[in-house]
Length: 261
Image 1 (tube, one colour):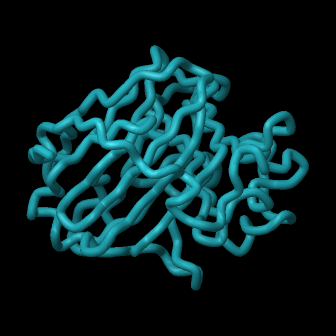
Image 2 (tube, rainbow, N blue to C red):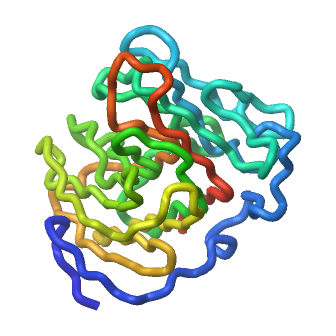
């Protein structure tokens, strides 16, 4: 397998393992119960939820203890179970409360540890985020999965972001360096709006890989990122802003799994 830096990728035909084999604790799409909150179908004990509500620069955050289980948190506007198919549904409007370092609203999960502390893992080891999802609506662009920089330096940039656009094109954005503001965009596939697809984001030492519907793309992580720890994010991180509360991005997840080895 040919490897390149984050500025360019080598596309391979290596098939990914099935989503169910990549970790326990998440119901399959066929087993989703449409009558319970998302925590009744998904293991949300290792996630917190960031919402597009709250005060400026300080969005509301729902802790894992509130999310988990069949009596867990749901929100009819931003985070709920679809009554038709049981999917965990995220809505992020163009107008909403943002974090201090972003201009965009989100309804998005942030990885946590089992003890309730914020996940913050090193590049060493094997770290995997797997999902099956579909995008129902998007105005311009939505990030549906991230590998985000944690502690280890001053940067708050993502190592990688997975984007979906209205025409169905899917891009992986890779950060050029911790301190640079720009990303390199790699087109990794295309899936029609409303159609289910799968992704697997994996960090294994100095290698980042994305498997999209069974096709794997591999990147080498530059040494400048070595001091940083990481964590996963997943949901609807809308990449456009306006004064509209009706335009935005709606994303439905049918499985979501995290594994560390």
